[in-house]
Length: 155
Image (cartoon, rainbow, N blue to C red; front, side, top):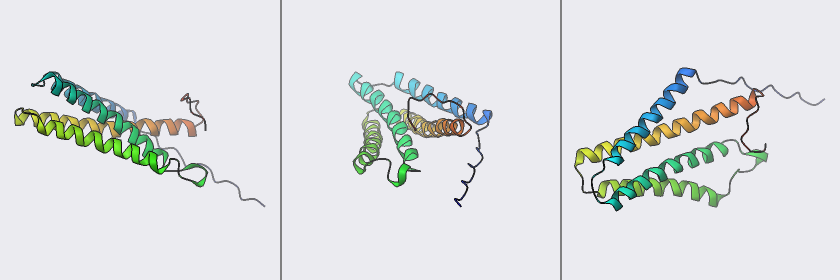
């Protein structure tokens, strides 16, 4: 007699208040970074470098979040991604953070302005990780509850 499969664990969903808090925090972080970068003193090349650095970091956060979550429960008994891809994802995140931090520290601007840019940048990174987790949790909860989630991905 084959063992009966155990039912899926109940799905714990985030409250609407938490979802609003995450979106509002992320919006505030984007706003603060935008204001800080819009009024950034210095050469246009330095300004462009910092904008690219912030976008690079934000993109790397979402890529790293997805990578970590995808490898949390690898399918078919093996690793979900290759070691080289692991290096690319972690390396991209590290390079984005290091280059942006190096650019920020190396700029010849007032220390208070550097502090504002640094704190808003770290706030953006942490809220982006939280947003990525919340969105993925919601996606997985909808899949478990049987809702159709159109992601373009195959199971």
